[in-house]
Image (tube, rainbow, N blue to C red; front, side, top):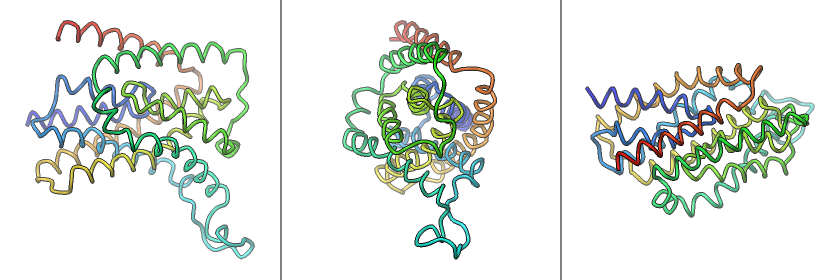
Length: 278
């Protein structure tokens, strides 16, 4: 029963932190210190990643009309465009370009990064560092006007650069959404455009990362292991719905400074708490 309650709490943490720029992996690593499940280390490592599938599904449900690229055959178009919406097809090409840096750099070094950087010191430093970055970028942007207001206006060079920012999120505590939103704003995207592109980019990235973890773990789940995983994903899905809507509503009238302050405060608290715990 206790482990079941822990799974629910972990699903809530995942659903909130995956989309807010405060680092889901960082929060999960911290949560591990207080509510790790009574399971093998291999399952736990897989669980922390695959639970994100619930969060992905939230994006798919909320944005399905904008994500689904196929339509009925249009006799006025030629080739692929007869069955695929031109604008959405180009959007997915841009997302693919944004994924390339993570594939090229992330896959070969995944195990090495996990072995060397998945610890509270790294998480705390990244929380603080990117918290400062958010505050600095928002201050700088007071004197600048965003030039890219729609995902359709993102060119392939900008898509690649956003992908390079996403690579920074391989270090826990950085935040995948935080890195790509910060990169997008730096490159001239509006806050909403940067946030929505981050949501869309998460679908193939997190799906790929989850499938990789499942393959590494194998498919020999016990009933209890499968039950925990599905429960965490369902909770993450419903919480993500609210988190995404909250973020989009919040940035209509506010900037990302509050998230930067939160990151700095949390990072300092992590260093203090673990200094005494250890």
